[in-house]
Length: 325
Ligand code: DGY
Image (tube, rainbow, N blue to C red; front, side, top):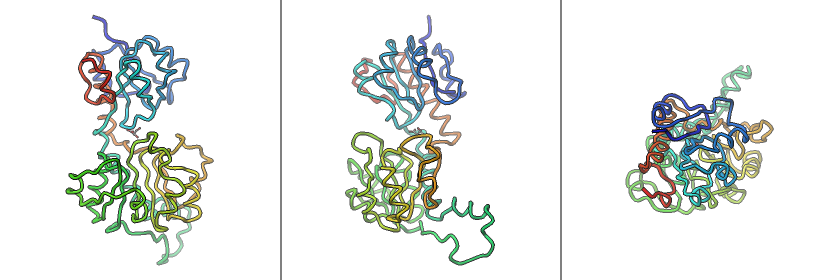
């Protein structure tokens, strides 16, 4: 029996390959970054499965892939995929929740600590040779312990951040589409409207998905409503924040600063003005970049894909309406 043809759009490693071997006739893009459009579309012309990392899956791509049955996203966030368009064509879409929750929460909380205590700035200060005397005003930051954190989107990652915040005796506020009574009981978290969360929090940490409702959720008005001493953390998606407004907020000191793992455009162009601000900590989208998490994502994404091609319902199916089972 012939195996279904699969195209893997990035250099996936052993944890994913081990799942694909014997279950798919697969080809992997081994080049730098993502495959150029002409190569990608050629490869997808007869593919039944597409394992995708960081590639836009839209009408144009889907129409270049008429045999496609499943698009398996390597990542929990799937704003790169037009799920409605896939559903119209009966193509399953899957993602990788769960396996990256703790790593992403660790990174988000690192941004809280690094921004509050100015770690990147202090590191640069030391290495530049400016540290010539100990001065009590040197690199003074703000306290994390006992402060108030406002979590926007108390999903799996938001809750994992709340668990860490509890360890720092933080007061926890959250906003989102619905109340989470179990999380309220576990963390003593209080459900509030976004406006109240912004007004009351010392740290505002974003953990919502990017969609039509959350695009530029945090703009000029929202940033102006935050405390002057507050810090914005974004390890979700760059476009949840209006980046130009954030630059104004941080350079004109409407807020104390920001910690960012994500940007509207990635890789972030080096002329992005936010990169010049000392009160903005910046990272290259490494939220889920721990070994265990990345292995988990690779095997989860490959399993979702193989399951769908074998007619078994994948665990992380995002458009169940297409599943005929
Ligand atoms: C995710 O899983 O969404 C991470 O941000 C990696 O893209």
